[in-house]
Length: 138
Length: 111
Image (cartoon, rainbow over all chains, first blue to last red; front, side, top):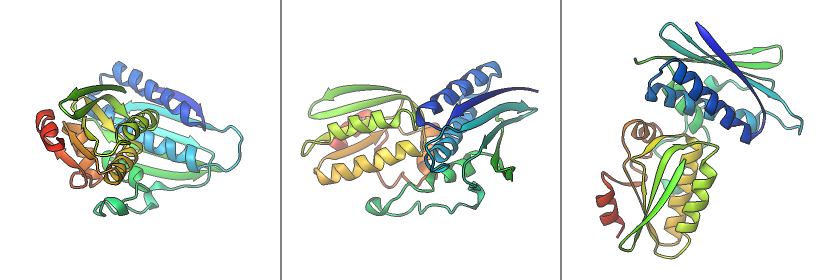
């Protein structure tokens, strides 16, 4: 088992540092392009949610992202001290609405749920603790 | 993400390479807004070199499709395959956009 950890501030421009960290981690572990893509999309959705909706103050907050491979499972753990938000409870978007009624709210979490094998959520000591797991295909 | 623009007859083809995520989506949005700003613009977006697209990218594509409607422009997507196609399918976007299998067919559909 090996792991890497990245900490970013709650700013949109910081998210690209996580993209780079995932790329490095994927190269070290020779992960397939599709598996890495799924995790990149899932993390983009989760992190933009936290940055955009997790806080109402103007202060800096830390968001921690830990990546590890355990056996055949790729795991990402995201910890933030924003408002409690359990993505497992969010409603699926209407993916059949016509163009002018189409909204993208909820779409990101819908992607996360479908791209990941397993998601667990806990609220611990005022922090959201989200674990995303993906069974590796190769 | 890399954007390459080419003219083919009266049609502008925008090739998007790499990734569309929350970091890169605004750049794509600006480009598409400019391209679809003129009345009766003809635009093909080629995704054959795209690795993935997150919901931030779909938000941009929805806005672009609505803008195309307003300016009576044509917006056609092509090269939607593999991982990118899976994401379009998950989001229910395959029926929402005009999608051509190849760039050539996309140009024909937009022209």
